[in-house]
Image (tube, rainbow, N blue to C red; front, side):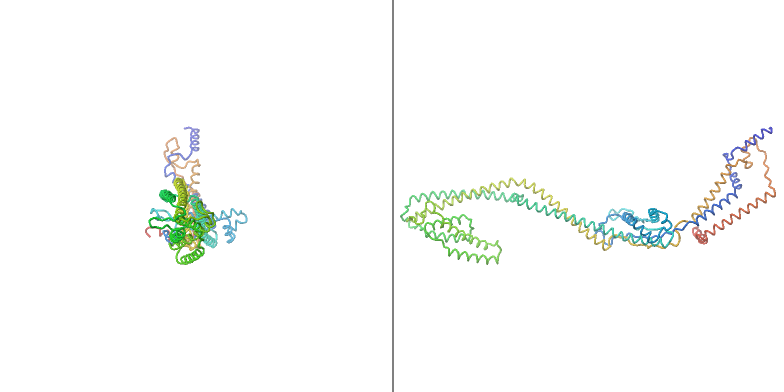
Length: 605
């Protein structure tokens, strides 16, 4: 091989990459041996730097308090609370109400928090710092639901924490937050219960006013449709049937009276007006006798029947006619005495009985009949004489039988007229009853609509009233703090050790990161180093077979320099390691405690 070819081959070998595939493990070990000093020194320097940073970081202390969510003391089956939200929901709502801008600014000013940032940071940034440092976490438990019996996660407590460089301030802030949470929970629950009670009370009053308005409508409807209500159907039918029966009776009476009048008129044709009449030894009564007889009958009948009874009216008319014929004046003195006596009796009976008592009704009828008799007598005395009867001072008939027949005929005529008038009234009533029966379906439909609305309003009113009473009891439950409530489970502690930063963790992680960084730097140097690293490397890249390898022969000066560099590296590592351990022992935790904790975790200790 020529000298030029050998040079070109060596140059080719020099510029080839050293990270050819297929390296053996001993090549990596050889690379580590070549860069061991650099790796150790760089790892020690980086670890020391990270240790200094970990120690220099400010300590943050965390104070924590636990608030328990206690269940209702009174069984829910007896008294049900109006607060239906879950505990975790109320915790979130109360946290939003407590951590408002005004409350947080008050805490910042009260305990002089974030004094380093208050001069150069804005108020919103300070509030963001405080909201970041306040931690609220819930404590859940897997319990059985009372209603469904299934296992559910329920919040039984929650923790309130605050991070601060000053442990005393952290404890004070947590105490203040706990007080705010407890007070706000009581306030929110009582306010919610009071609002529920007020709403139900207002709704009950509104429904009561609506029911009163419906009562007035129903009363007005019943007054307008008196006798046409659905429950009056049977009464109207009975009245209609009774009216039919009464009409039939009146028709029979009219027919009998008409026959009687015809018979009396026939007898009148046979009797002379001025001759006494007799028949088979029986003597007809004179008008005076007839008058006295009728007055006795009238006194007896007036105590039994009312003033509107047909017999009473007939007797009144006949008495008035007989008094006109005979010229007898009415018995004013007897009537007045009798009237006073009856009124005295009525006053005595009213003291003992009610107005519906039969004796009271009987005396009242007697008084009414006596007053009507006196009025009829006065009217007859002042009225002109009837047709067919002699006038006062005119010629009188001498035959009592003739006079009696005339009187009976006139009485029969008037009774027929009265019955005819009564018949017309009965027929008008019957038409009224029939019209009511026809109108009842329409009235019933409208009445059913009114009663349905009225019943619905009453049902709603009863439901609202029941809920109102429950809400009032629940409000008293909240006032007496017997419902579900927040209670202090564990007060805010005074932290003795910082919560973060975790310097041990930072230092351990920094040591591992330093070692990895040193290994990475060594690998990069190895990767970009174009030199031949040894016989194995040369055998891989050479184009000709390698016969033998001559080891590198160090000189005495080189060996001395290597030992000096090793001592320097070892001393540096020893010093940095000692400083590292000293920093852990002084600033973090005694090494004896760390060793003891580590030994306890071993299974054979």
